[in-house]
Length: 238
Image 1 (tube, rainbow, N blue to C red):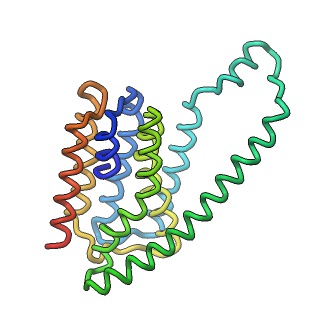
Image 2: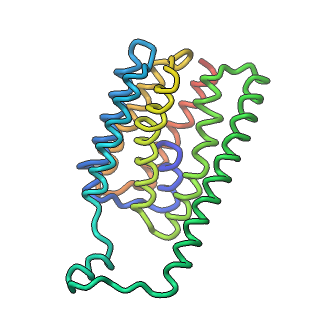
C-alpha cells in the first residue's frame, strides 16, 4: 500500500471506482483485522489457517459472480448465436498461456534467490529474521507488483493497479498465511503488534484517500511514501 501506491500516484494520479469502497477495501480491512485477532495469542493455528482459506474461497466466488461479462460473450448472448472463433485466437491463447507459465517460473526462481540473499545479508548485518522479512524481503517481493503498477500507470490501466495491490494483500493474508499455517502453525516471534497496527492504519487511510475526489493524488502518494520511509527507519532502530 505505502510503497507501490505511493510511487504509482507520483507517476500519475489514480482514479478509483466506487465499487472499490463497497467490496475490496472492506474485504481487505476485514481480513487484516481477522489476522490480527488470530495472532493476538502469538500463534496462527491450523484451524485458523483453514478459516482463512475458506474465506478466500467465498471471496473468490463473489469476485467471479460480480465480474462483468466480456464483450464477446455478451454479444453472443444478445444475438442468440455463439461467436465464432477466428483462426488466430488459438495460437494467441497458447502464447499467452506459455508467457504466464514462463513468468511464474522465473518469479519462483528469482524469489528463492532473493530470499536466500536477503537472509544472508540480514544475518551479516545482525538483523533478526522479522526485520529482514518486514524490510528487505517485503520490498523484494513487491518489485513485480511495482513493475506491473508502473506499466499500468503509463497505460492508464487504473483498475489493474488497484486490483493488483489490494488483491495481493488479500491473497497474502487469506491464501499465503492460510496455506502456510495449515502446513505448520506460525508464531509471531519478533513481529510486534505495532507492525500489525501500522498495517491496519495504512488500510484504513485508503478510505478517505480514495473517497476525496475518488482518486489517489500525488500529495497522498507522497504521504504514503513518507509513512513507509518512517516505518523503515523505526524498524531498523527499534
